[in-house]
Image 1 (cartoon, rainbow, N blue to C red):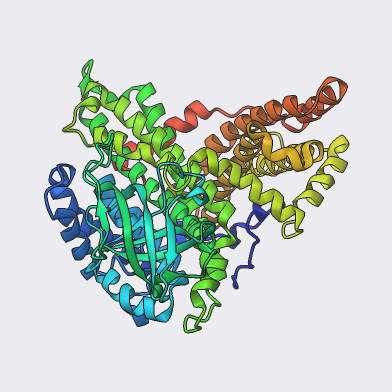
Image 2 (image 1 turned 180 degrees about the horizontal axis):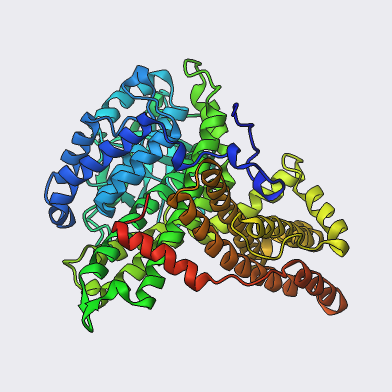
Length: 594
């Protein structure tokens, strides 16, 4: 098959790629499968049996579970080997994240912050001295990490931080003063990666230990969900932070924060995927046992519709996550792991797919929210009762649309990054948009009838890409430098980009499976793609209409809508029957099928 070519971040909007060029779960190595199995066994053996104790904040329980996870290597996937880590590929790391997330939101909040934003800033930007002092202890769980960025007046606008850092007269310390808010792991953390302004304006990152004099934490927040995780404010009062604990460079704290957030968004998507799979399994198990009107409710059409759709959306999430993981590994593979500045190169590589990371964060958090909501609905009144796992899952998953940048902020970021890359010619998106505009008078779907080769779905994805480019180009042309002020339009453009990536990810995975086999698994994947692509295409068409109506008016609008109608003319697909087929396959297996 050969080495896949390196695809530019955001490139899915301007070019088609072949199924062989993406990684899918069907490509996992034996080692990766063993990692997933080990993570699942840890959850089943150590975490789920004490789920209620975690929820009730039993003293010392979460730290002890993290230490057990450390003993088994689950804390050290991203840490270099010379500092006690495993330096695993990103697909293996997110496989751990996905499968450990089955242990529930509270454990995963602690785990995710420790291994992600609590540790990665030191991995990427720490000096060799900082790495030697902290990473081995973080790898084992001896030190539990937290990430202290948010402040009462600085949430998504993180650089508006009020915390200050003043260099001592002898140059040995920075004196930190300020307050951080909503800090996960605050009550159990030994270290905080935090941010403060040096000389009043230079946003800078620091490593602060809990034992430093002047560090204190407020009372636990009483949260809607994640009740078993620690969330407190952290207060810095004349804290003397040794100068050698300055992380990265003075005034470059935003580089640390933004690069770490890219990876955190990606990891969050994997966590949401694991939560969605658990919700689906709980829903199917309940539907098969719950008897009404003389038969299990799993036999009723409207319940099958729900289960089928839950499985389809989970399949699309999974396809997107591991496609992105494969791309990330491909760009990181050539980096010299022994270079002094290896972390900076790793961060730069990860930044290439910042657009896809935001897409995964939005899509997976919203799809997981949909799936857990449907799981509660299938449970009926029991879904509202605390003893049932879906009740806890419903509360826990809600935060995923807020953390690591709200979904609204991430929608703005997607288009901001795309347009900036286009303006710098890093991504020739505007040229591609102009090419579509030139083709428009003669542009028509080549395939309009459904078949068993996904021919029509391939054409729909291609047309979806062209529509997204066309509308984005029209918006840029009209608003130019004022486009960032048109947030409603940016949201629609981002939703179009998200759907293109989602549709294509599922399509490429199914085509890859179909090329290898004609078994039932490939057949069901084909069916899933038919349902998702056909319904997503309708959503994308609606987004395009709304955006064009905001961009143009009069004869120009009529002309654009007429052209849109011609390139969206596809034959209908019986999604009711297809979704039922997916549901029956899922119900038979009692869980997400793969």
